[in-house]
Image 1 (cartoon, helix red, strand yellow):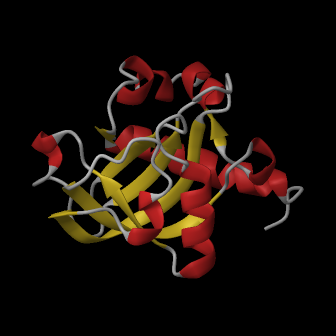
Image 2 (spheres, rainbow, N blue to C red; image 1 turned 90 degrees about the horizontal axis):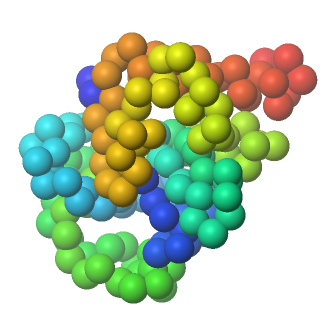
Length: 163
């Protein structure tokens, strides 16, 4: 099973609305695969972390959702509910179908903020930290384990130390 970070820029696409609406409805999203070299590497069962970039709000970025690929990438238009959320609609492209397991759109809800990742001894070397302009980033197993740990830890902190 692979692990990936897929990035969304709120200046180009209303990431928060898309994730909230999908999570409330059927938990299914489609995410673009802009780095075509990964199209044949992303597989059903791969774990996906959604990264919302800062956009216009400095230090608001980080990992805001977690999911699982449920269908390998296909060439398609965006799903209907997402088209109006683009500031400039990109049209057809390769997209992965993802089942959302968890969405946390703020620090108070348990997202992993960009600053925490940049200061983490393991995660400071993530591809998205070094090269912020891409959409899709593979994550090695060591870094994936660290992200999983922080994801659970943030939830425990939000719940006041109770599971």
